[in-house]
Length: 302
Image (spheres, helix red, strand yellow):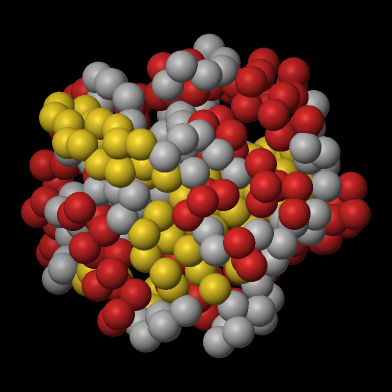
């Protein structure tokens, strides 16, 4: 009972700090690891789906600091028969919920390179009866190769480039999404989530055929200018690549539901107290649908 009360209290504090630079400092990360190893349960359930957690509950599922706003948007954008790509699937939280949304005729491709995360991804998919999820133990990028995966104490912050957040590295395979996805699915992709800690540009560079073959596709990508730079890319490079494929962008961290210019995104999240956000990207024929989903999600938050 005391443990549950402490977990709820810590959840309130973690939610307030989640999108600030303070949360990324070494002392804050240490405190989070220390507390979560002691407070987290082995398993949590949300929306009729149960999840086995990693050692420090990196997604904050047990303290309510997970991005449920993003989950609602993903579920609203998917429908029966959709194909969903989850690049950076971690323990499968979004993949499992997407599995329900796309139904028996849909497919979820989940990509996760970390052996420990991948084990939990498979375990959570099996525990929730997700027969339509195809789990791929590989990183994704612009080439088919092997690459070093740098490991963080917070397993959601693993990345494929050196970082002060990481302490060790292992070698993992890397594949282009164009080659990892079955050719007959290239024109069926409805939604792609890219959460790769600054590697988003490289992921997009590895999927030109999918981008060209799926005109209805929507992209949700993590956008942290500092991490993009550390990975050898830049905020402008990522946004220019998306714009070049005809995508307009929305800032999921903003209160409104209107497209935002790349320059405005860069200005807002460079040298800011908020280090980054998630962006949702859609082509002209799907802007009304995205606006509707964002408006509904914003209403649900209030």
